[in-house]
Image 1: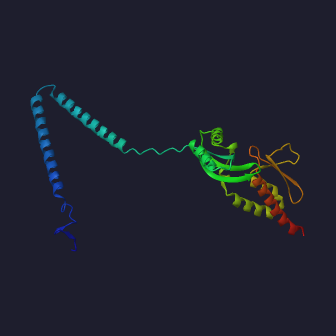
Image 2: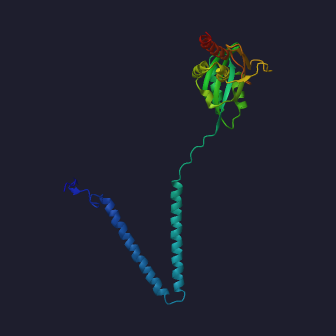
Length: 268
């Protein structure tokens, strides 16, 4: 009927084609089981014959049966426990919670300085998510967004970077939103502010990640930046803990220049 044959025998019959050793082991096991059954029956007959006429005979048989049941139950429980412990899933590795920090450090323009900062960050379990270099009036400023395991404090990171050669190291909490590419952010903000001149102060604050403060405020120093809008109004930005660099001032002036060019056709 179209059945496939292997060495002249059908392979769709469950018992045909099995290895010879497997069949031999099967009938041997069955023979041993029958022999054990006969032995058990004989022992039971002896017990019933020898003890059946005594008053305690029935109780001894019941006690023997209970002992055998207890032994079998214990064996099954131990076997199940051994298999359960052997197949227990391996617990997943718990990743510690992390926080993001925005860090700035003034560095010397020497070979290996950036590598030293990276090695110091890795030594305390930190991961550098982004890096930018900003030329400034009194040197170069490296800005890093570092992800630290939650038990590690920002002071530990500042100390590590200072020991690695960083100067005036400062750190403040950051968010994942700050990891947007600076060029992309500047282009989007310039387009957004060009649609409405009133958005310019907010766009500048978003570009430099600072906050707007009143023009007559007490804020002063390198942590405050004063700019003049195309309309002549003063725009003051304040960012505590992170002084504005010359590079950031140039970015703000570029955004102001774009806003001024966009406002000129409207004025005419």
